[in-house]
Amino acid sequence: MQIVFATNNLNKLKEVQALIPNHIKLLSLKDIHCFEDIPETQDTIKGNAIQKAEYIKSKYDFDCFADDTGLEVSALNNAPGVYSARYAGEQRNSEDNMNKVLAELKNTNNKEAQFKTVIALHLNGELKTFTGICKGKITNTKYGKKGFGYDPIFMPNGYNTTFAQMKLELKNKIGHRGKAVAKLVSFLNS
Image (cartoon, rainbow, N blue to C red):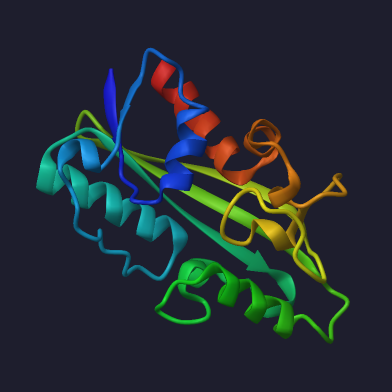
C-alpha cells in the first residue's frame, strides 16, 4: 500500500515516518510533485485536516491523509487552537508564537493545556478521521532544542521534561500526533 501524507512540514513527516509500518509506503507532497501551499481556511482543526486531504485527493487523485494540530490553552479559551501556526502573525514563526503564549500566561497560575491532532484519511473514496490528544501544561520558559513548534514550552502530564527535551521515540509514544497515527495505522491494518 502507498499513501500520501499531505504536509510540507518536514518535522511532521519525520515524526510520522517513524510510526508507519514498513509495508505502508509513505509518499510526501514532493514525491507527487505538489509544491503549492494547501489551503487551511477552516475554523476547526478537524476542518483543516479534512480540507487538506480533500485537496490532495481531488487535485492529484492519490489516497492520502492530512493532519492538523493545535495547542489549546485553558486560560486562553483554548487558543491558539486552529491558529497555532500563525498565532503571532502570518510569518508563522515558532519563536514568536511561543513568546506570545508565554506573555499571555505571565499573570495566571492556570497553565493547563493540551495538544490536539486530527488526521483525515481519504482512502478508497471514503473519508475517516482520527484524533489524538496529549494533556499537559505550559512551562514558564522554553526548555530543550528538539522537536518543533510549541514543544519547548509544553510539558506533558506525568513528565518533568518538555517535548523539546524528549527523544522522538518517547514523544511519539505519548504525544498527540503519535496517538492519532496509531489509530490511523490500526485502521489501515484492519
